[in-house]
Image (cartoon, rainbow, N blue to C red):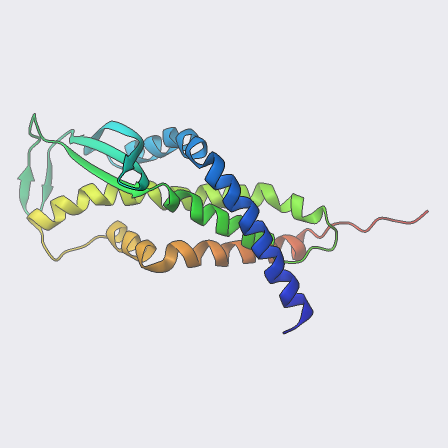
Length: 203
């Protein structure tokens, strides 16, 4: 195996261990800080549901993000009008790890591509952080929303689907792992190719 590949794999493993430790120690705090953005995205995405609670919760041995909602307005689905019920409530959950693991993989893979100078890795971090927020926005909020919307689809139009439900199925079928790895490597390559670290001039 080429030495460069071994070095890249070692760098990826080291970054994953460090970032994994950060996620393990401060994962709840990071997820808690991100919840207001998650809530704002869901409320902007769809006004059918009113969010009663969006919080971290313990579900058996798992740490989860839990969303409790009520139906805020009527809507039409499958030719039928769905009217809100005063006592109607529903909840949806997803693992906190589904927020932290893609972020860990994206940043670690983004640091895997070799840089010409050691500090070149640091110059990638703002772009990797932005990409992490973008992927998070395309994952957990949509998964939580789809968990509720899927109940209505099953009840009123069984067998049908929608672009968001298809996307969520893809995430849960492996795209949540593959996508951050691919995006991270591509960003690392692009940063080094387009904005290489300048060479220091000798006096």
